[in-house]
Length: 283
Image (tube, rainbow, N blue to C red; front, side, top):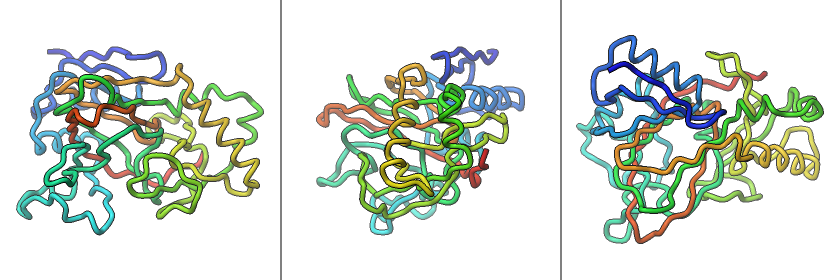
């Protein structure tokens, strides 16, 4: 079957059909999948049936597998046999609990827009998320295009953010912004260039961007609030309503993502891999 790519919204997201992510893909198919990912920021493959090993193999299309980020005290929770080559790379996004303790991460509630590992020198490049069990309603994943948002900025704002850097920070286990000093943080350019496409992207998110370097608190807060509201405008956003067997891949440099709330009494289980990135390139 030929690979087909259909836009999900004008600015972000595409449905990719004709690909079995569990199979060994030929060069032409692999190239088409990666090109769709770069062009649209988020790609969706429906009706997939994947083991963790098959998902990991597909994930390598988008770079080198990255070890997952966990606080030290949680590294041994739910740990699988040492012989499993994917222990340390697989992350379960789930509210399922055993003996009262979550078997994975990010179990409940909504989550503000963010990108993965931006509080480190080297953020993630791609995130690959596979739906296994999903609630009947809610638990949607939201995506916003940082490239389209940048390209729609007015000249005054473009001039204001030119050459600026911002602190990206994170508190483990926190899904809503806090103003106190994060446990991990890194100073990154406020606008970056995606090297494969040459497009510029805002590097900001409501959850993790804390302040703009060289600006007073009031001015920094006002600028960031304006950017957050702009990024999250409906025209730049794709809302994904999960079905079992959905496989989503997003470009962590060109998009931010969040989550809507859902009934905690319903099970939600998704499996995640990520790939290693590179330090952001300032525009």
